[in-house]
Image (tube, rainbow, N blue to C red; front, side, top):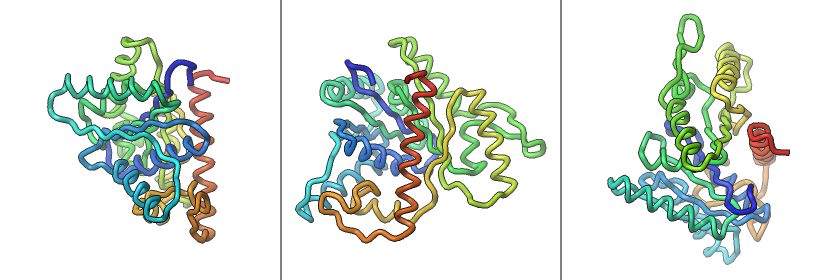
Length: 270
């Protein structure tokens, strides 16, 4: 993070259901509990999963008479007027940069002009990816007979474009991190092929790939309360933790640590 501006983290993937909002919210709370001032922008304001998550968090805190760390949040719904909407986004980012250490932007699971604009402001781009060939298809086309990469897909091409856009605008670089969610614990052939293909793509597309979050019921349950694993048994939040919760929390901490190390590796930071 530079001394003069907020570090912008964009969570993006053009496929829905990859866990973007879950990753976003846990990352946001981790930053808040680390003592940072966090601004958040929801560019998927039509579905508004992140916005509802934050609203649920406010409601839970008010209902239970407790204080929870909260970001300064802005949902942005596209109006169809691209120049105007992009200027509004730039204005929100400029405003948040005067007060925040970090800005987290959640993007829609589709290719929109606002999503592209949001991506172009990223210092760190985090792409959650379910561990399946359906999700891998947003990055690359794979030959089903040879299991070799035939070419890049739409989302990879979009990331190339916004990297150029960022470089032209201010000379900045985007550190790209791909995290694989819902990893299978079985040593199946498909899992081995996924590992090989993602590793090959990381070299070609210049991203760091890390292990993401498993498929756990707790993540779906927490949404309704607006809580994250990092809130449990803090600030008056009392919830009995079972072994699954403990395992999920360890998995989350490993993920957050890996994101930090991945960014340092990509940017050459100490």
